[in-house]
Image 1 (spheres, rainbow, N blue to C red):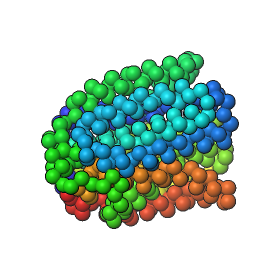
Image 2 (cartoon, helix red, strand yellow):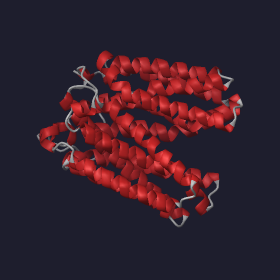
Image 3 (cartoon, helix red, strand yellow):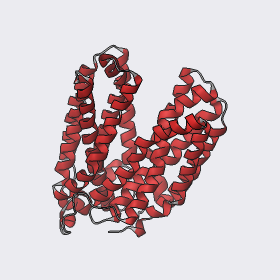
Length: 397
């Protein structure tokens, strides 16, 4: 059971270094996102070619996540996590160095693959620390990722505004993130201390899992819950500004504020989410989140002024914030080998992130953007109804 406790990073051994690794991962993603226009201009890519290239990171992540889950179990999880986060920091330099479109696609595929592998590894470490703590910490971990992402994007905006070459900017960020990640990885709890969640001694007592295991029914249900939340996240992140411009008629600056409100609300909710989970439990938290996100999506559907649409997107961010962290925590408890459970849920859920922009666009073309966000509201209701799959007692190892 998850017991109430103070929410300080120092209260649980191993929590601070894991949080730092989450922040490093987020900062790398945020840094890259801000330099996409520079990469586009350098290779003179039209929107279609750029869109195809940006599918490569998602494809790489989806391919890498299942084997990464097995690798975390088979090897020392602490070393694997440090190596993958370090590789992700180094891979940050590759897209800006690519001299051609074909090599850009390869660079983005590698970037996405190490990002996905590192995602599975650091979440496995977080599950292990959470089990040792006996209370929820996963929401705060993902909050650290969001803070890192905003910090990386802010630095990227400043670098772009100063006209700094992206190869220099991303190279410098890679060095800083590599140093920070190496220092944090050395402070991760050893395998014996973390037990099954990080590929430690308890996990090694079980037979090694197959490299590509078929997900169990509980893991599939957890993955479907995560799918609904990630779909809502992808739809809001990619279409919020377009929605305000095309449906509401907002100015470009106001349209940009829709995503800012969404991202800030999600980060804030994740940072305080562990306290809420400790009070009411994961199931009630996700049910309330589903209702809140559905309300926000419906507000977006009926909004015809920015004053209604921007709060609607913020409510979606608040509602979905804790769902993926709780889904990862539940997946880590659902099977003997935490890494494989997390990898399976990540593959299912992040598949939604790949599918959401295209599905929203197709529905908008066939009907309208408000109709597309009515689908988002339905999915939010759906993950709220499926919240029982995240109950800790249902999946204890």
